[in-house]
Amino acid sequence: MTSRSYDVLAGAPDSPVLLHVPHSSRVIPPDVREGILLADGELGRELDHITDAHTAEIAAAAAAAADATPWQFVNRLSRLVVDPERFPDEREEMLAVGMGAVYTRTTHRAPLRPAGFDPAPLIDRYFTPYAEGMAAAVAERLEATGRAMIVDVHSYPTGPLPYELHGEGPRPPVCLGTDAFHTPPALLDAAREAFGGFGGLATDTPFAGTYVPLSYYGRDPRVSALMIEIRRDVYMSEPGGAAGPGVQALGAALAALVDAVPPHPAA
Image (cartoon, rainbow, N blue to C red; front, side, top):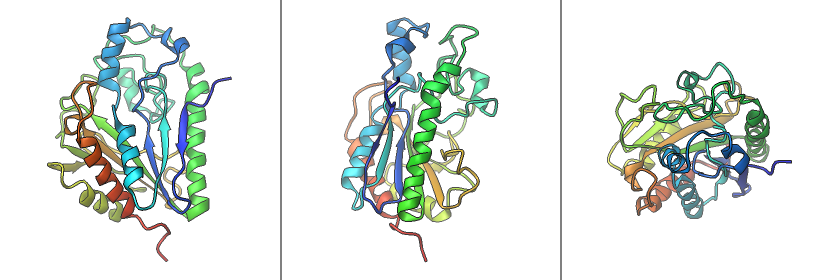
Protein backbone atom coordinates (compact mmCIF):
# COMPACT_ATOMS: atom_id res chain seq x y z
CA MET A 1 0.00 0.00 0.00
CA THR A 2 1.45 3.36 -1.03
CA SER A 3 1.36 6.16 1.51
CA ARG A 4 -0.31 9.37 0.44
CA SER A 5 1.92 11.51 -1.78
CA TYR A 6 0.48 14.87 -0.74
CA ASP A 7 -0.36 16.86 2.36
CA VAL A 8 -3.47 18.91 3.00
CA LEU A 9 -2.58 21.63 5.49
CA ALA A 10 -5.66 23.01 7.22
CA GLY A 11 -6.51 26.68 7.05
CA ALA A 12 -9.27 28.77 8.53
CA PRO A 13 -12.63 26.96 8.47
CA ASP A 14 -14.25 29.84 6.56
CA SER A 15 -11.45 30.35 4.01
CA PRO A 16 -12.32 29.37 0.44
CA VAL A 17 -8.67 29.60 -0.65
CA LEU A 18 -6.62 26.53 -1.52
CA LEU A 19 -2.94 27.14 -2.28
CA HIS A 20 -1.85 24.34 -4.60
CA VAL A 21 1.89 23.53 -4.68
CA PRO A 22 2.45 20.68 -7.16
CA HIS A 23 6.10 20.95 -8.22
CA SER A 24 8.20 21.93 -5.19
CA SER A 25 9.55 18.51 -4.14
CA ARG A 26 12.66 16.62 -5.25
CA VAL A 27 11.62 13.33 -3.60
CA ILE A 28 11.56 10.21 -5.79
CA PRO A 29 10.73 6.84 -4.15
CA PRO A 30 13.51 4.25 -4.62
CA ASP A 31 11.44 1.90 -6.76
CA VAL A 32 10.46 4.78 -9.07
CA ARG A 33 14.11 5.86 -9.23
CA GLU A 34 14.98 2.43 -10.61
CA GLY A 35 12.96 3.18 -13.75
CA ILE A 36 14.84 6.42 -14.51
CA LEU A 37 17.79 6.16 -16.89
CA LEU A 38 19.86 9.07 -15.57
CA ALA A 39 22.91 8.60 -13.40
CA ASP A 40 22.72 10.25 -9.99
CA GLY A 41 24.59 13.39 -11.04
CA GLU A 42 22.47 13.77 -14.16
CA LEU A 43 19.31 13.25 -12.14
CA GLY A 44 20.38 15.92 -9.67
CA ARG A 45 20.89 18.41 -12.49
CA GLU A 46 17.52 17.51 -13.99
CA LEU A 47 15.84 18.07 -10.63
CA ASP A 48 17.56 21.47 -10.43
CA HIS A 49 15.92 22.46 -13.71
CA ILE A 50 12.48 20.88 -13.34
CA THR A 51 11.67 21.54 -9.67
CA ASP A 52 9.81 24.69 -8.66
CA ALA A 53 12.18 25.03 -5.73
CA HIS A 54 11.05 26.77 -2.54
CA THR A 55 7.48 27.32 -3.76
CA ALA A 56 6.18 25.37 -0.75
CA GLU A 57 8.09 27.87 1.42
CA ILE A 58 6.40 30.76 -0.39
CA ALA A 59 2.98 29.20 0.20
CA ALA A 60 3.82 28.55 3.86
CA ALA A 61 4.94 32.16 4.30
CA ALA A 62 1.66 33.34 2.79
CA ALA A 63 -0.36 31.07 5.06
CA ALA A 64 1.49 32.42 8.10
CA ALA A 65 1.00 36.05 7.08
CA ALA A 66 -2.60 36.00 5.86
CA ASP A 67 -5.38 37.30 8.09
CA ALA A 68 -7.51 34.26 7.21
CA THR A 69 -5.20 31.26 6.86
CA PRO A 70 -5.63 29.58 3.46
CA TRP A 71 -5.63 25.84 3.04
CA GLN A 72 -2.61 24.25 1.35
CA PHE A 73 -2.42 21.19 -0.89
CA VAL A 74 1.25 20.27 -1.29
CA ASN A 75 2.73 17.53 -3.45
CA ARG A 76 5.45 15.73 -1.46
CA LEU A 77 6.91 13.91 -4.48
CA SER A 78 8.83 15.20 -7.48
CA ARG A 79 7.02 15.83 -10.72
CA LEU A 80 9.42 13.24 -12.19
CA VAL A 81 7.25 10.64 -10.42
CA VAL A 82 4.03 11.96 -11.95
CA ASP A 83 3.05 15.47 -12.94
CA PRO A 84 -0.40 15.96 -11.36
CA GLU A 85 -1.17 18.95 -13.57
CA ARG A 86 -0.94 17.16 -16.89
CA PHE A 87 -3.80 15.39 -18.61
CA PRO A 88 -3.26 11.63 -18.23
CA ASP A 89 -4.18 10.95 -21.88
CA GLU A 90 -3.84 12.22 -25.44
CA ARG A 91 -5.35 15.63 -24.55
CA GLU A 92 -1.98 16.63 -23.09
CA GLU A 93 0.03 18.76 -25.54
CA MET A 94 3.26 18.14 -23.63
CA LEU A 95 3.21 14.53 -24.85
CA ALA A 96 4.86 15.99 -27.95
CA VAL A 97 8.07 16.43 -25.92
CA GLY A 98 7.71 13.35 -23.74
CA MET A 99 6.33 15.24 -20.76
CA GLY A 100 2.79 14.05 -20.21
CA ALA A 101 1.57 12.91 -16.82
CA VAL A 102 4.60 10.58 -16.66
CA TYR A 103 7.72 12.08 -18.20
CA THR A 104 9.78 10.02 -20.63
CA ARG A 105 12.12 12.87 -21.65
CA THR A 106 14.10 15.45 -19.71
CA THR A 107 13.98 19.23 -19.85
CA HIS A 108 16.70 18.98 -22.51
CA ARG A 109 14.76 16.28 -24.43
CA ALA A 110 17.12 13.45 -23.52
CA PRO A 111 15.66 10.02 -22.62
CA LEU A 112 14.45 9.88 -19.00
CA ARG A 113 12.78 6.47 -19.08
CA PRO A 114 13.26 3.48 -21.39
CA ALA A 115 11.50 3.29 -24.75
CA GLY A 116 8.14 1.60 -24.35
CA PHE A 117 7.85 2.51 -20.67
CA ASP A 118 4.32 1.81 -19.39
CA PRO A 119 3.04 4.80 -17.39
CA ALA A 120 -0.13 3.06 -16.19
CA PRO A 121 1.23 1.79 -12.84
CA LEU A 122 2.47 5.25 -11.87
CA ILE A 123 -0.83 6.80 -12.98
CA ASP A 124 -2.76 4.34 -10.84
CA ARG A 125 -0.45 4.59 -7.84
CA TYR A 126 0.12 8.34 -7.69
CA PHE A 127 -1.72 10.42 -10.30
CA THR A 128 -5.25 9.19 -9.73
CA PRO A 129 -5.18 9.35 -5.90
CA TYR A 130 -3.69 12.85 -6.10
CA ALA A 131 -6.42 14.04 -8.47
CA GLU A 132 -9.08 12.52 -6.23
CA GLY A 133 -7.52 14.18 -3.17
CA MET A 134 -7.49 17.58 -4.83
CA ALA A 135 -11.10 17.19 -5.94
CA ALA A 136 -12.05 16.26 -2.37
CA ALA A 137 -10.24 19.32 -1.00
CA VAL A 138 -12.17 21.54 -3.39
CA ALA A 139 -15.42 19.85 -2.42
CA GLU A 140 -14.70 20.54 1.24
CA ARG A 141 -14.15 24.25 0.57
CA LEU A 142 -17.40 24.38 -1.42
CA GLU A 143 -19.28 22.66 1.38
CA ALA A 144 -17.80 24.95 4.03
CA THR A 145 -17.89 28.31 2.25
CA GLY A 146 -19.99 28.00 -0.90
CA ARG A 147 -17.01 28.41 -3.20
CA ALA A 148 -13.38 27.46 -3.70
CA MET A 149 -10.47 29.49 -5.01
CA ILE A 150 -7.42 27.57 -6.21
CA VAL A 151 -4.15 29.48 -6.40
CA ASP A 152 -1.48 27.44 -8.16
CA VAL A 153 2.04 28.35 -6.94
CA HIS A 154 4.78 27.72 -9.51
CA SER A 155 8.13 29.03 -10.66
CA TYR A 156 10.06 29.01 -13.92
CA PRO A 157 13.66 29.55 -15.06
CA THR A 158 14.94 32.89 -16.24
CA GLY A 159 15.91 31.41 -19.61
CA PRO A 160 13.78 28.97 -21.62
CA LEU A 161 14.58 25.27 -21.50
CA PRO A 162 14.44 23.06 -24.61
CA TYR A 163 11.26 21.27 -23.52
CA GLU A 164 9.15 24.45 -23.49
CA LEU A 165 6.63 24.54 -26.32
CA HIS A 166 5.95 28.26 -25.91
CA GLY A 167 9.25 29.52 -24.56
CA GLU A 168 9.67 32.32 -27.07
CA GLY A 169 7.31 34.71 -25.28
CA PRO A 170 8.12 37.33 -22.63
CA ARG A 171 9.38 36.04 -19.28
CA PRO A 172 8.28 38.63 -16.72
CA PRO A 173 9.14 38.43 -13.01
CA VAL A 174 5.58 37.25 -12.36
CA CYS A 175 3.27 35.50 -14.82
CA LEU A 176 -0.42 35.15 -14.04
CA GLY A 177 -2.01 32.12 -15.65
CA THR A 178 -5.73 32.34 -16.30
CA ASP A 179 -8.69 30.36 -17.53
CA ALA A 180 -11.59 31.95 -19.41
CA PHE A 181 -14.19 30.12 -17.30
CA HIS A 182 -12.53 29.91 -13.87
CA THR A 183 -10.58 33.20 -13.53
CA PRO A 184 -12.97 36.07 -12.76
CA PRO A 185 -11.71 39.59 -13.55
CA ALA A 186 -11.77 40.58 -9.87
CA LEU A 187 -9.36 37.75 -8.98
CA LEU A 188 -6.98 38.73 -11.77
CA ASP A 189 -7.12 42.38 -10.71
CA ALA A 190 -6.38 41.43 -7.10
CA ALA A 191 -3.36 39.41 -8.22
CA ARG A 192 -2.05 42.27 -10.31
CA GLU A 193 -2.33 44.54 -7.29
CA ALA A 194 -0.70 42.04 -4.93
CA PHE A 195 2.23 41.15 -7.21
CA GLY A 196 2.79 44.56 -8.77
CA GLY A 197 5.99 45.27 -6.87
CA PHE A 198 8.38 42.71 -8.40
CA GLY A 199 9.45 44.56 -11.52
CA GLY A 200 6.73 43.58 -13.97
CA LEU A 201 4.06 41.00 -14.64
CA ALA A 202 2.12 39.61 -17.57
CA THR A 203 -0.74 37.26 -18.25
CA ASP A 204 -0.33 33.78 -19.72
CA THR A 205 3.30 34.15 -20.79
CA PRO A 206 5.47 32.12 -20.85
CA PHE A 207 2.98 29.67 -19.31
CA ALA A 208 -0.79 29.83 -19.62
CA GLY A 209 -3.82 28.38 -17.91
CA THR A 210 -4.50 27.15 -14.41
CA TYR A 211 -5.39 23.95 -12.61
CA VAL A 212 -8.93 22.87 -11.76
CA PRO A 213 -9.90 19.25 -10.97
CA LEU A 214 -11.55 17.74 -14.03
CA SER A 215 -14.79 17.06 -12.17
CA TYR A 216 -15.22 20.83 -11.84
CA TYR A 217 -13.39 22.10 -14.91
CA GLY A 218 -15.63 24.17 -17.18
CA ARG A 219 -18.67 23.13 -15.14
CA ASP A 220 -18.80 24.86 -11.77
CA PRO A 221 -18.37 28.65 -11.62
CA ARG A 222 -18.11 28.46 -7.83
CA VAL A 223 -14.56 27.18 -8.40
CA SER A 224 -12.21 29.98 -9.37
CA ALA A 225 -8.54 29.54 -10.17
CA LEU A 226 -5.36 31.44 -10.91
CA MET A 227 -1.79 30.34 -11.55
CA ILE A 228 1.09 32.33 -10.08
CA GLU A 229 4.34 31.67 -12.01
CA ILE A 230 7.38 33.35 -10.45
CA ARG A 231 10.62 33.77 -12.38
CA ARG A 232 13.23 32.06 -10.27
CA ASP A 233 15.80 34.84 -10.21
CA VAL A 234 13.29 36.87 -8.19
CA TYR A 235 13.84 34.68 -5.13
CA MET A 236 16.59 32.07 -5.59
CA SER A 237 19.92 31.15 -7.18
CA GLU A 238 19.50 29.21 -10.42
CA PRO A 239 19.37 26.37 -11.13
CA GLY A 240 18.30 24.61 -7.96
CA GLY A 241 20.12 26.91 -5.56
CA ALA A 242 19.38 28.50 -2.24
CA ALA A 243 16.39 30.71 -1.51
CA GLY A 244 16.84 34.42 -0.92
CA PRO A 245 14.80 37.16 0.74
CA GLY A 246 12.39 37.11 -2.18
CA VAL A 247 10.66 34.13 -0.59
CA GLN A 248 9.29 36.25 2.25
CA ALA A 249 8.41 39.14 -0.05
CA LEU A 250 6.53 36.80 -2.38
CA GLY A 251 4.83 35.15 0.59
CA ALA A 252 3.63 38.57 1.73
CA ALA A 253 2.30 39.32 -1.76
CA LEU A 254 0.50 35.98 -1.88
CA ALA A 255 -0.97 36.69 1.56
CA ALA A 256 -2.24 40.03 0.25
CA LEU A 257 -3.98 38.19 -2.59
CA VAL A 258 -5.49 35.71 -0.13
CA ASP A 259 -6.72 38.55 2.07
CA ALA A 260 -8.32 40.27 -0.93
CA VAL A 261 -10.74 37.36 -1.21
CA PRO A 262 -13.83 37.72 0.99
CA PRO A 263 -14.56 34.59 3.04
CA HIS A 264 -18.06 34.18 1.66
CA PRO A 265 -19.61 34.66 -1.79
CA ALA A 266 -21.10 38.04 -2.56
CA ALA A 267 -24.80 38.14 -2.01
